[in-house]
Length: 633
Image 1: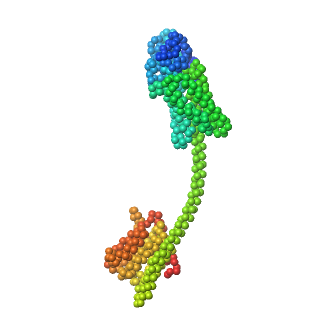
Image 2: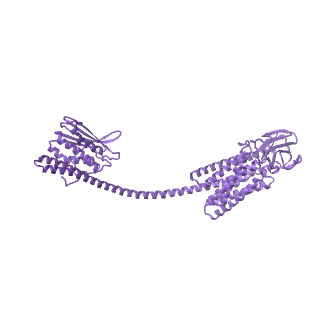
Image 3: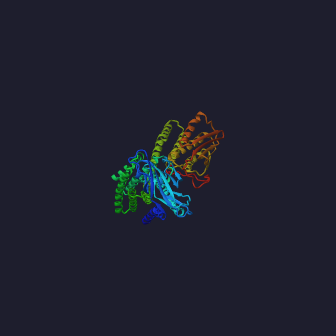
C-alpha cells in the first residue's frame, strides 16, 4: 500500500512537469530585447535600452522593490504561412499586452497593474494572425509591482497543433490541479476541525488549520481577478503558506508523541508570527524577509523530520512509519523548490514540486488520522463492553441489596402495623372492656346490654386480629372476614343478608392498616344496621368499575329499614367516623336514606399498578372466607 502511494506521487510529479519537456518540440524563445521603464525611486540607474536579456525574467529578483514596465521583443520564423501559428506562455504578469508586428493582439489588466488584476500564475495561449512574411515581430509588454511575482517565462512558438496540447496540459496541472488540491485540503481541514470540536485533541486542530491555510495558499493560482485588493491579496495567501508549514510540522510531532517539545512550541510561535512577516514582506516591501523566513521554517522542518524519522525507525506503529515517509518527501520537495528558486535561471517557469508532494502528504496524514480514529473507536468499544459487564455486575449486586432492603422494609412495616394495632386494641378495645366491667359491677345492670356490648367488643377484636394476619390488598378477603364474623349476629337479629361480591383486583400498596380501616368501617355500618335500622333484609355488593380516567372498587351496603335523616345531629358521629375511615383509605363515602331503603356506597380508586385476578366472574356462590387466626372463633 505504501509503495503504491509513493509510485502515484512520482507519477503526479512527472506529469506535473511533463509539459516543459514536450515544449522542446516547438521553438523555445529564451532571449529577447528588453526595454525597461522603472517608476519611483530606485537605487541603480536605468540600464541602456534596448538590450538583450535571458528569459525567464523574474521581476522581484531582477528589479527588487520597484514598480515598472518591461517590453520584451523577439522574432519568430514563419515556415508555412498557411499553417496557423501560436504562442504559449507558461507565466506572464502582472498585467500584459501582446503586440504582433506593431498591432495589439491581446491585453490583460491596466498599466500600472490594478489592485485586482494579477495574471502571473495563469498559462496564456495566443493565436497569431496569418502572415505572408518569413518572420513576425512579437512584443510582450508587462507591468509589474514588487512582491507580486510578476515577470515573463520562456515563450514557446509553433503551430497551433503543437502548442494547444501543451497549453491545455499546463492549464490542467496549474489551474485544475490547484483547484483539486485546494478542495482536497479544504475538505480534509474541515473534517479535522470537526473531529477536534468533538474530541478536543490538539493534533486535529493543528492538522485542520494547516490544511485550511494550505488550501487558501493554493487557491491564489485560481484567480486572475483577485477577491481582495493588492497588497492584501498578497498578504493573505503568503501568511496562510507561512502558517501552514509549521502547523503541519507540529501536527507530525504530536502524532509521534513529541507535541510538547521545545521544537513544537517554536513551530507554534512561527505559525503565530506568520501574519506579521507576511504583512511586512508584502506591504513595505521587505523582499529579503521572505527567503530568510523560508530558510528558518525549513530549518525547523528539518528538525521535525529528524524527530519523526527517529521515532518511525524505532516504533512498530505503522502510522509512524507512513508519517515518516510523508514528511521526508515533503521536506525534500521543499528543499528542491527552494534551491531552484534561489539558484536556477529558469526558476520563474519551474512548477514547484511541493504542490504535488503535498497531495501525498495530505492523503498520508489523513490516513494516519483515520487509523488513529479507528483504533480509538475500537478502544472505546472495548471500554464500553467492559463497562457494560461491570455495570451488569453492579446492577445485579444492587438488585440483591434492594431486594433485601424491600424485604426489610416490609418486615419493619408489618411490625409497625402490629404495634399500632396493639396500641389501638389497648386504647380502644381495652377502654371499652373496662367500661363494660364497670357497667357489669353496677347494681341492677341489665345483663342483656352487657352481653351485647361484649359481643361487639369480641367481634371488633376478632376483626382486628384477622386484619393482622390477612392478605394485604385483598379486598375480597377483608369483606369475607367481615361476613364471617358478623353473619351469625345478623341472622340472630333476624336480618337476611345477601352477598354479591365480584372478583376484585389486589390493591397495590395496601397493608394491614388499610384492611383494618375497611373492616372497621363495615363493622360500624353493620352495627348501626343491627342496632337502629329495624331491617329484615340487607345486601352487600362489591364490583370493579372501569372508567375512562380511573378504575375503582365500589362497595355498597343496602337495607330495608326505617331509614334516618342523614343531616340530623344524632347521625353525625357514626357517619363522621365512617367518612374519616373512607378518607384514610383514599376513597369517599356516600349515604342515602329514606324509609324502607338506606344505602351506603364506598368508592375506592384502584392504584395503577394493581393487578386484576385471572379468574373473573361473580362470587355469590363462594363460601364465607375463613379467618387466618384459628384461635378466635
